[in-house]
Image 1 (tube, rainbow, N blue to C red):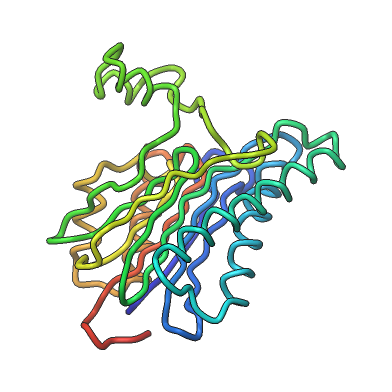
Image 2 (image 1 turned 180 degrees about the horizontal axis):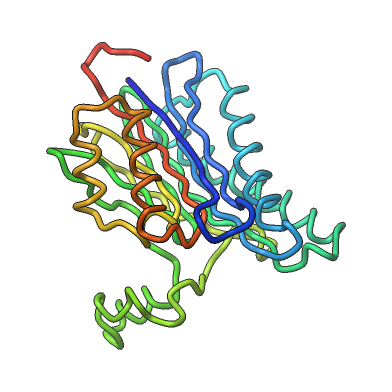
Length: 248
């Protein structure tokens, strides 16, 4: 496996509210996660940092994930714990009221591949030189698209496209969507909407198909997003399979 991750403030925001991580445990299992924070008074960066730090720490401390059912339960528990930590921080720091974060994560073992998300940060598999979206955005416009009130084309420039219907830390409890995916993929790709608002799937896929190192790919995607305006913080995590017995 080869992997790389990077986060960038973009060209417009004066600070970065995203957090991103890729971790390999002692059992050669992988965790990838991206969080896109929101909220005033640096609340967003605190919320995303709490989520990623807690999830990463718990993964590192765990020997192995176990069965798929064990891993799904672990995802639900660790995300619930992160949600409580963010909510408690808000209660203890009233100036951070309203802060929260999206979270998209993926777990890869020899036996299964899982994705989970809350909010509008996205998870994809990379296969046959194309990215294929696995997660579903918890946004107002996505609800409107599903109900047939607006088209997917209209959703792209909708004035309320950034309105989230679900976020980590916004309420005392939260339910994460979990997706069970076949493991025969060429890679796993996670990103915040700072990337997908600037680049479409074909543009992202083209970079991931180039003869570059994963570090160069991730860096190139961020440069491209910034060249197109960089209107938001940009975070990318990419894990690429380089052979059945390969290891990073």
